[in-house]
Image 1 (tube, rainbow, N blue to C red):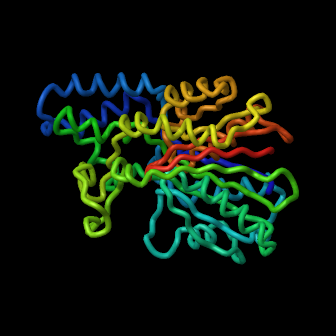
Image 2: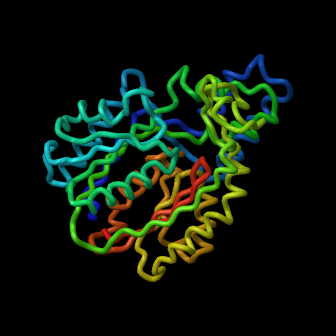
Image 3: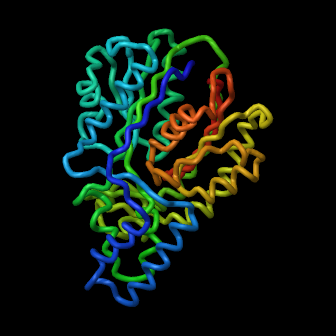
Length: 347
């Protein structure tokens, strides 16, 4: 399987850490029980410590489908393919406008992929990585030759799962389940893969379903579909709830383990791409496995763009000349679920 093209489209509104604390102040004024300024200082300190500087959100008049279409057409041009040459379209991630049908159908219509088979893969921040593995499996059947993977991670709209609910703090202790929301960015990506001879991609996964309650966006009636937990819907039903510090702490061992199971040839790795949940955390992890020099971060510029994190980082590395044809790359992901993955491929 060959990675032929990756494209990323960002919305135009740049949001700084100061903008985040100002939004929290605006929505929390009159609701917060305690010293709000102290809480804002703690949030600002956490964002700086994690490595966050900016992220991009939709501005007035911008629509997710337009950015997705831009990313897809750019990827097609880079790959030298026409829309009718794509056999399979896979939509991934959390940002979506429909529970039914799969977002892939609406995306395919907007892009002009009138002959593509369509389906979604939803596995939180792991979605893109799962979709790449599925695409390689489909190619192995001999029935498909080209695949496009797209996502439109636009979750910061007013009335959505984050804004204004998670920005309306009532007490300092609420930061336990809200801090990750303040790192979120928005982006659309498109990845083109083709069934070509070459070195197979290698994947390793670990799932920890016992940690599923640590990061969720629940639906009405969710109680009947899970084991009870006091962490679920901590911020409200339909509202993003994420115990980020706990996730990073309990994920250290599993992330290290899945990387060691992959055991890539470290001396041949030109670029390492990680989930964009914290620049500091992933830099420390990369240093620990001897690839600190190769890690390519987008978190500091884009924030946590969910399932778009890895493709956005690959696109940035390609644009900067950090990854070239024939070089080896490694991906490393931790996700709600919880799940962990490490994979490697040669461009």
